[in-house]
Amino acid sequence: MINADAVAEWDVLIGEWDEIRHGYYLGDAPAKVLECARNLEAGVAAGDPDTALWTLGLVLIGPYVIYAYPDAEAEARVLKAMGAVEQALGQTPCAHEEHPCDDLRDDDELDDFRYVLEMLAHPERETAGAAAPTDDALRADDGSDDESDSWFGRRMTREMWACPQNLAGFARAFREV
Image (cartoon, rainbow, N blue to C red):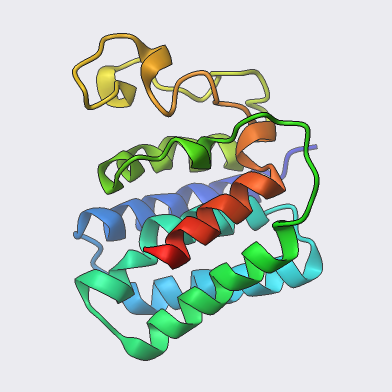
């Protein structure tokens, strides 16, 4: 059974993360980033099923304390949390030939992470593409009209995005930037 309160809480949090990403969050953005990092560390340690949400959320908002408003202590905490993901999940075997983390080409593509987070937060959206919006927001920035060419297209499944190898790949890429 789906916990409607938990889904609603995720929806609010994802909205706040999106606001941080776009620079118009009115709350304490550094505190929100650190909260995400703490929850990610705790989730990884406990094997929390929401680890995918916390990891990808931190991929989305972690750069705030690294680039937008640098804070050495917050940056260290974010990098530590991502290191925990990479260490805990990086050796988990999977049967996937590729992962969404393999195709992330540039920072502009993180704008679509909101859709990924929403899909992960809504377990009722189990079918491929169920959470994908129908507008042109998901089109590749290369001018292509073929959604399947987008890094986002064809991979809108919980299984692919929550795969431990995918999460470890995003954590690794985040730490290497």
